[in-house]
Image 1 (cartoon, rainbow, N blue to C red):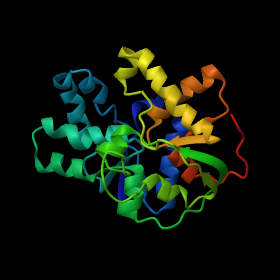
Image 2: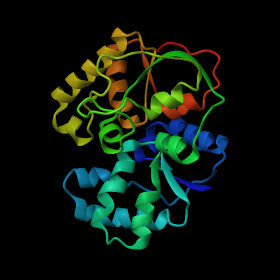
Image 3: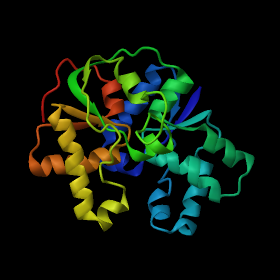
Image 4: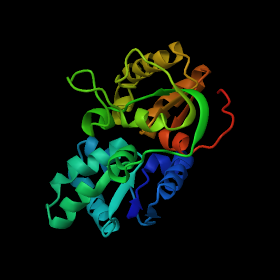
Length: 251
């Protein structure tokens, strides 16, 4: 299958290693990956600020850029959710409808499309999993406490295939980190308090690394980690799934 790789703005600008790991991981599981250089933002920041009309040209550019691929894969539940659920403001031509259906978050794609059963990866560390709100409640990448149903997590399923990973238990596995995009700008005090609470849960259980499928959440927590000198680091899940590291140092 041919995959069009969509890399979110903040990964492109601040966390390129997460994008590279996603590319390498997809190739390892047998995908032919293309990176359309014309790609830009999915339009989520504008839409979330009430400017969806202004975001329409970005939506249309996204559709034009990623037409023709078997699947579009992105290492961000937030961006994927926006394409799948907010591109309904476009005229729903067959092309638009099919593009929305073929756009997948990375873990969802690996589990439900590729059907990954094993990974040749090693990452000896205590790892805490952060579930982003868009990924958990929007894309259903795992169970959430407000719904009744079987326990599952695509991230935990994949991480359990990585040699050396010790997944730490958390008291609140589905709590928001407080980022929320523009929420962190408009409500900085509340956002910071939520981020500290989320970090405290991981630290209380002695996580060495916090991972997630949304680098935006990790970016928010990393800011607090750096300012407060906390003994933990953040990594996108793709970096761990693609890792062959013999040692993992503490932050």
